[in-house]
Length: 422
Image 1 (cartoon, one colour):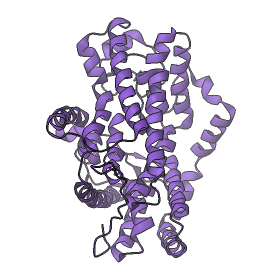
Image 2 (spheres, rainbow, N blue to C red; image 1 turned 180 degrees about the vertical axis):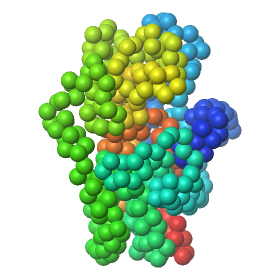
Image 3 (cartoon, rainbow, N blue to C red; image 1 turned 45 degrees about the horizontal axis):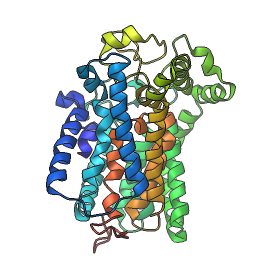
């Protein structure tokens, strides 16, 4: 399930499987949900606000599908094709029933997979060898002069939090793993991604409040960062950094509406959102509520006939600009796929999860790191599509059994084996 929801964890990607992971995730969600509903009665408790938001989002998307049919005139087939991936958050109803032991086993397995993936990613970046399948052409970053790939481990920040905050004071192998994960982090070359990961790690130190651990971890982090000092400086001191900051402060992205913009910069991201928001401001209230219709860019004939946005990524095969989706900023996708009302509901769902795990920050170590991971995802929404993709909710949903057991009793479980390893 985790693999399907995260594009094969960045390893078994859509191009390798020749089928969309999110389609497999949807089939899995439907099949397991039906089975769970019939054979696994729920006797535990829920966070009422969280449950209400999940239910409300489902009701809204159901109404959105009806709106797309009656207002936009989309056929049922077009609506299913365009909206099927929006309903993956329904995995909540069976993931909350997963046993605590299964959750602990799964996270150990995911840590091993992330470690192996990180090592292969480092080899890939430094050598250019195809040790990981990658269906894009890697470009040389102008600031650092090294290859930039985007198939880094999906769960990298989470397990970096685990190793630094709770691992390096237990076992020597976690020190090695910390170096590997940090190396992978900096080789992603994502300035916002790197900065927010380190910021959330700093927040983890504050939450943990263990002076001895902070001192030791800080020393190890400084040593680990030394080999990447030049890389960090070159990446953050590049021309794009000054340009992005000036664009945000001066509002220069507004001038880009009506013309093309270079993808990947803050200028491009803000212009992408602004162009769609400007269009909606001239449309009826109903379209502002539900967005631009439950349809996908894959149905290009319909989409291109309806919309003519000029800012977006260009499809190499068709030469057309993606009208309704961008991987570069979540808020744009919230606007087009969910509208203002649906976007707010989904954002509130993410924020409620953040609050739920924040309340447990003095409990299980996984719960602390999940709070930091959620914080990272929400803050990183200005440079990624994470919170606009309901498939990404499966990871925090999976940790809910650590909070509520079958009797609805709050669980405080510290994941320590006898040898103090995960």
